[in-house]
Length: 180
Image (cartoon, rainbow, N blue to C red; front, side, top):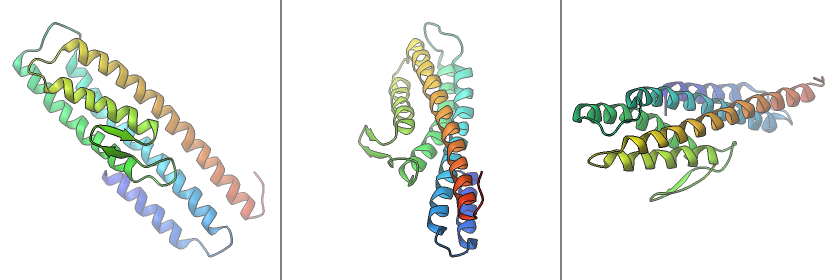
């Protein structure tokens, strides 16, 4: 988990501790945790994209094969992606409010689509990169699929984060006797 994600989670716990005890406390805490989880997912997806962009740039235009030094550089850049994708997997395994936690059984993945699709593509990338002579065309096709999945799931996280914030705001106004 990233340092930022740890700090956000700690802030959420601190805010929960200062909420007064009232009938709406649990509802507020649940909505707050939902906002925090969507925010964490949004942030982690950005971290994934940052690492993937370096790998994608190194991949360059499609060609017949990679030189040994190019392949080594690709593998180094992929390790950065793996680190961020592992953080996504760890986060997905611990979600409580934004969907089903990720479960792995060998190569079988179960959980929310935003985790399963991206992590399944990670497995496919790693399969190709383990080959003695990875096919650039295969990597380019996977990169295209990864980009589409990333953008789709980032847009989902963005929409859900906004919606969760609005639900929290409406609940807060209702509990405090106001309307929004």
